[in-house]
Amino acid sequence: MVKIFIDPGHGGSDSGAVGNGLLEKNITLMVAQEINLILQNEYEDIAIRMSRTGDATVSLSERTEAANNWNADFYLSIHINAGGGTGFESYIYPGIGEPTTTYQELIHEQVVADTGFIDRGRKRANFYVLRETRMPALLTENGFIDTTSDANRLKESNFIVKIARGHVLGLEKAFSLTKKQSKPIYRVQIGAFSEKVNADNLAAQASEKGFETAVLFRNNLYIVQIGAFSSRNNAEQLAAKAEDAGFSTYLSN
Ligand SMILES: [Zn+2]
Image 1 (cartoon, rainbow, N blue to C red):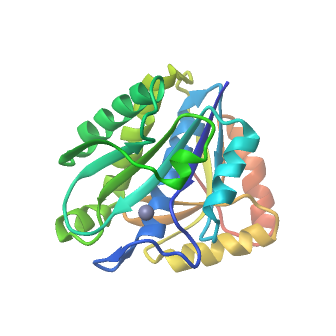
Image 2 (image 1 turned 90 degrees about the horizontal axis):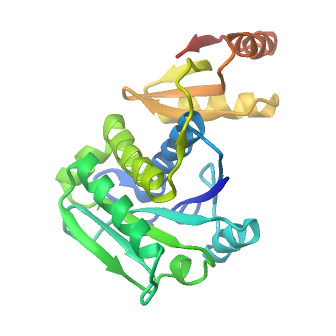
Image 3 (image 1 turned 135 degrees about the horizontal axis):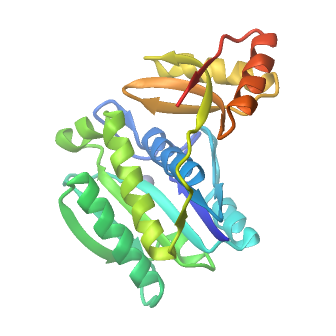
């Protein structure tokens, strides 16, 4: 069992960097949720926790303590860069050695390969989350929010998926993760919107009624999902429950 802690940078009252109509906290959450979903759907023998799953204010010490208390095997912090520039860079703690250096190399190279980002290099910095975590930790800076060409790519859901895929494939190599036997996944969804706020509102209504919700960004639509199953029967049961609660549902794979 490999325990991976995913930390979407910023959140809540801390928007992170801002540029080109984007807030860093929203992009980091989308990338992190995508990484989480791919890992959960496609790999076995892994456990994942996230420092936040919504637009919440979480302090740096709360993030690292959650990972330390859980005894995570790896801490992955997702950020978007700012300050003028373009491309991808990643950070580990100064002076740290193996296996962190290998993890950085594998994930860094894969994200660059999958995104086509300009490679700004593997770097080291005395960042709080790298210093205070007791497990190997990596922080990635995925493009520049204040550079129009990078920001335009970050606005595309397909590009968010590419960033996530790069991280996941790097994690697969770093931790020799095992892929699930491919079988169909039945997703129970209750709405699709072009405006994120509408998806968030519906997700909040479903949460209030006891459903576990996730908002996915697919083909430039925000989709509200309440479950994903390998058994069609289980998916249909949840769909029926949601219909009873007043939601219209559809199954997707
Ligand atoms: Zn940041």
